[in-house]
Amino acid sequence: MGFSIRQRIILQKSVIRALTYFLLILFGILFFYPFLWMFMTSLKSNAEMIKPQFFPTELLWGNYVRAMTIMPFGTYTLNTVIITGLNMIGTVASASLVAYAFARLRWKGRDVWFVIMIATMMLPGQVTQIPLFVLYKQLGWLNTFLPLVAGSFFGGGAFYIFLLRQFFKTLPNELADAARIDGCNEFGIFLRIMLPLCKPALATIAIFSFMGSWNDFFGPLIYLTDPKNYTIALGLRAFKGYSGIQWNLLMSASIATVLPTLVLFFCFQNYFVKGITLTGIKG
Image (cartoon, rainbow, N blue to C red; front, top):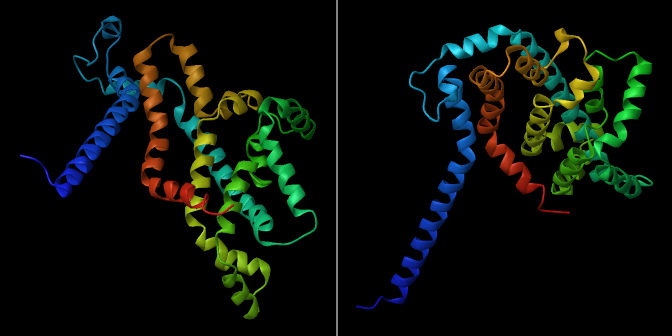
């Protein structure tokens, strides 16, 4: 018995939907497997580490307590929270101001300076690392948090400025014109009208800044020498050298420190996806 055209269309859509879900589940499992391996390894005993088994015989939740108390991870977490929080505040505040100036204000040389700013994205971080180190050394900022947070208060980075500029350009000009007629100045338009409309883009910038600062290893390694100022990334590296190759404890510490990043992303993923999508509407 043959199928009608309508039945064929429905069957074709069902097959495509089933294949789509199958591929999504398959790739989801592939991406989730490393985290599952970390979690299962963190619950194993030292004797089970040399056995070729995926699941532990007994769930040793005490590994997390041991891992977090061998070294002062509380201090490392507090240092990381301070650095990350300041970077998020500085990046969101300064990048939004600079992006608004590039997107909504008209001033001489605006497009030229925007091209120059975008061109800085092509410079590897290693190129500017030595001049920045010399500058911070002359300022007496070494072994402090200042080298790790100062840059976020001066634009935060070309990528963040570009992302917010694209979002500002999607907002209608009629909103700003109506505010000017009512006597609102330019900073008032930015603060009261434009900025509240940019919540998805601001949330995206905040998430990017959080993940970059929380997981940063190279910056703290260069500028921080006192163990009391270590961040979580440096603490994990020092933990590996202190405890030897105790992979169960190392995975326990890694799970505990990466958990805030995962929680933040899953809580604000709607803002993240919406911000990335809307910034590409208008060039």
